Length: 116
Image (spheres, rainbow, N blue to C red):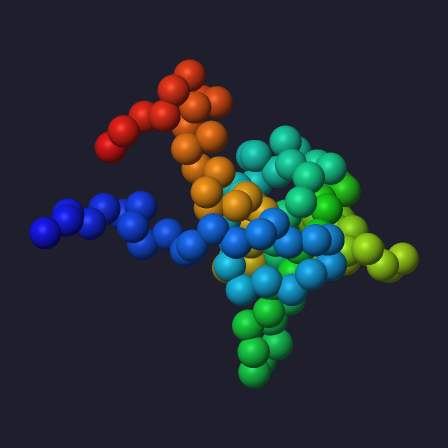
């Protein structure tokens, strides 16, 4: 019998979504301290309605604090109009990182894939 780990629960590797494409899976939450490092990179944001959960791929163009203290991301989705995404509690953006890239990330961080 094979022992299961948390990594067995990750979704199967999917092709990387294109800018503007709707998706059902996404990577790790990007905390506000890390968002400047993602400027110019693909991210996933929540554009759900009351009836359906929707997530979309876009490119994070800017990240700044508004006058009222709320952080705002400007996201390009391939259309002329940019998405102005305000970050309230429970409203996050996520990495657009293929799940099979996890070992590559560990190698970049630790110099080798760290076994658990």
